[in-house]
Length: 272
Image (cartoon, rainbow, N blue to C red; front, side, top):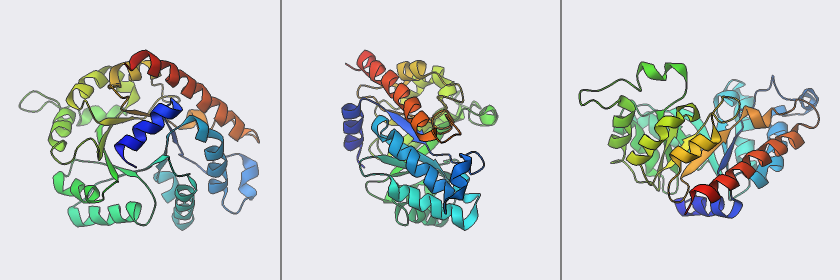
């Protein structure tokens, strides 16, 4: 999916919601455990229920890898089930030496139909560029995450005074443009989104943490929006685990619809 296609979807649907399919087999409704593939059965119904209210789906691969070969099968089936026109993210947080990164890129961009993959940039340029070798595919670099340990390294001041995460952002802009690279910025760091937006005025920001993790959607939008939106705001648990009963898909739809309605209001408020 191109940058222009993603902006078109946001404009047409009036939402910038990304639904996180962080599907834990231990948390899905009990009646689904009778299915041949409970995780895929759950994901399929969540996708059907939320598709009208979002523009993207993000699959955290750890939830699938934990189940071994069966988990990879569920991941593949889910990625293939998502309808065309949605931006799909493999939240794999890969990042290794060049030849290994090339194999990771092949796995998610050739073996699976993902549009994007999250990448840890701290091994440097040669660990990221193999992902950028795929036209039409996106690399989403971890910039400033919302976990408590992010201060251990990401915020450390360098000799020039800027924190490491800012140096990561400014350096990586030489590797690819805003049509192929995004940045992850945690929603609980909303106050710093404005500073990051000044560094990357035209890039998309993937913002996890709205919902169960306590991120403030209005603050994220106010600080992070650009002239065309430039945001994908992810919500996982608050949507997909809205109910653990037979009505789980309907409740997920209601939660996604509520977020999308808020987003529509914010788009009208903040876009010219």
